[in-house]
Image (cartoon, rainbow, N blue to C red; front, side):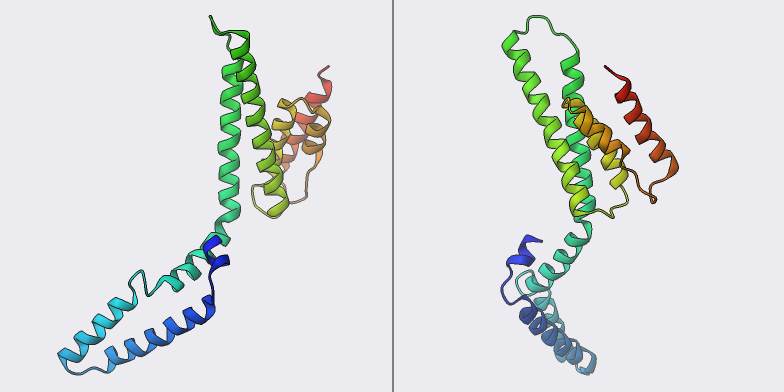
Length: 184
């Protein structure tokens, strides 16, 4: 996406490449002699080289990146959530011989991981509100908020449901909100 955004005269370069491709393929189709055909094939091979086809690749890969960016954000969120969960689990297990300073450092690292996960989920929901996994992202965001000690935000996040959300997803979110409200 970044390459596409920074490309100078991309449309012009792609159009130029397209004109060349049309011309070279036309010569290949019309060629009757083996040496004409060979020259046309060489020109076509050169046309598809990384250097000459670069504008086309930028255009195509940029389009694919735009289409996949929501899914990539969701997958990054899953990774961040997993890291936070693992750090939280490690924090819950007492270790012998660890100093108070080491425990505080581990606790701070865990908090930062939860904040990172929470930010990714917020960003996903803001940038891709129609993403098919936005309900799951919201549920995990609520978990991150709860782990950060912001119970009000977690309950509000979990209570935020939509008509597009499957009934069991709604039920799970509302159950989590209710359970957290019951805690002192």
